[in-house]
Length: 147
Image 1 (cartoon, rainbow, N blue to C red):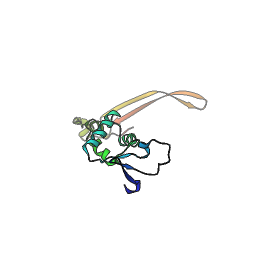
Image 2 (image 1 turned 135 degrees about the vertical axis):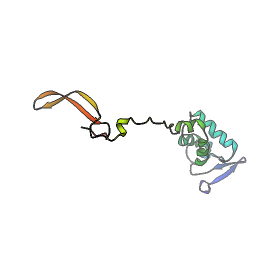
Image 3 (image 1 turned 90 degrees about the vertical axis):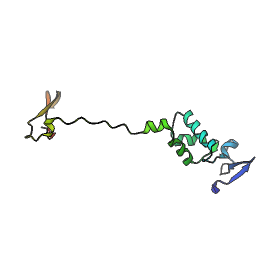
Image 4 (image 1 turned 60 degrees about the vertical axis):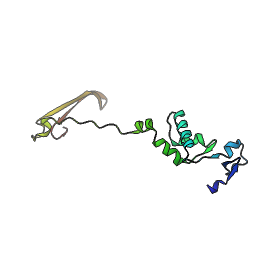
């Protein structure tokens, strides 16, 4: 914090910095320093987070830096406790997979049980003429080989 040249102003700590001669308001060039551990600061971060529709740390930090100086770590701590954000970023629930059919788990010779996929017509240019072509894929149900 020492590099920001803090000073007291009516009992509040403000940051000096290098923006004294910029065409900004007094609050923007000398923002108030808030302690991230105070309950008021946490409520202010949470209120801004909800007002900005649960956006992330960078957006909230940019919103605060116009008037206040709050540490990024304090914002991260408050956002980690936000239940709607945790639910939105959570992993999807795992589903129990169905058992494999007997054709897939019993040892059989190759292509004893097959599946067929069919596509077409596709137009292929051979020389100067267009010809219709079709695709037939034969899948082995046991080994998943394709012919």
